[in-house]
Every structure is written in C-alpha cells, then in structure tokens.
Length: 71
Image 1: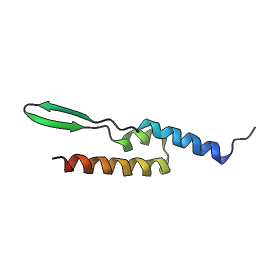
Image 2: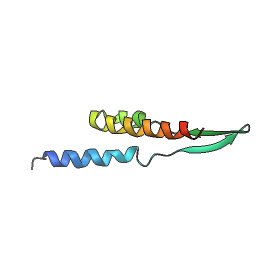
Image 3: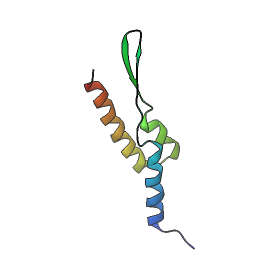
C-alpha cells in the first residue's frame, strides 16, 4: 500500500511534539532570576523539515519576546 500526502502531513504534525509544549526553566542564581529554554529551532532542526522549522522559528521568536518583556 502506498502512503499518500495526508500521511506525511499527519507525521509532520506529530513531530511538532518535539518542541511543543515548550519548557521554560525559571530559577534564582546569586540573587538574579534566570529564565532559560531549549530553542525550538535547535530541536526541530534534527528532523530537517523546512515547514516545521518555520513553525519552530515563529514559536521561538514569540517565547523570546515574552521572556524579554518580563525583564
């Protein structure tokens, strides 16, 4: 049985689970609050998919903006 385009779409959406939900680590170090996260683009880069990389990049930029706004 040949796989169709819909199966590829489903598999790509499943791969989004590698970087969603995004985890943030918030902790205090030497009296300073630190916020860190793994970059979604670094994680999704492992699957070499331009469509998913665009989604990961958008999510990463939004998260960085949120972290920057919290400062």
